[in-house]
Image 1: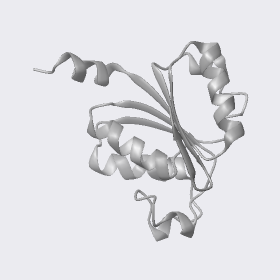
Image 2 (image 1 turned 120 degrees about the horizontal axis):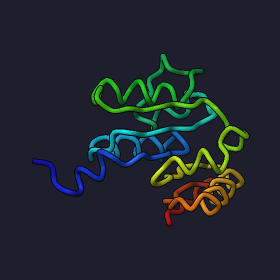
Image 3 (image 1 turned 90 degrees about the vertical axis):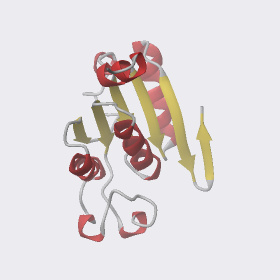
Length: 143
């Protein structure tokens, strides 16, 4: 029988923003701990320089969408997970307050300070908790 924590993870709807170095780790950890409904937004494509730290990607993925390839990589070892991938900019008008209100929590893993602030504003407006992590150059932040 599943514990209360396991049931909560199964029912939670998660939004992840960023599928790079932080995002690959977050996505792996989420699915391995039981989360089954994850939406993933990233506008970047995979570059050769990503391959040493973004373990869901391989050389043949270069030039492809990070969000879509991350989804496919995870589905290979957890096919029962619902992952919706958006190859898009989180600042696009389709990702508005109403969109954010569909989620129980938002996880940020961005390397762009402006986009991180944008997600923070949307979470505040939507009343959705934000777990913030990101990088700028050699600096990192988690909050």
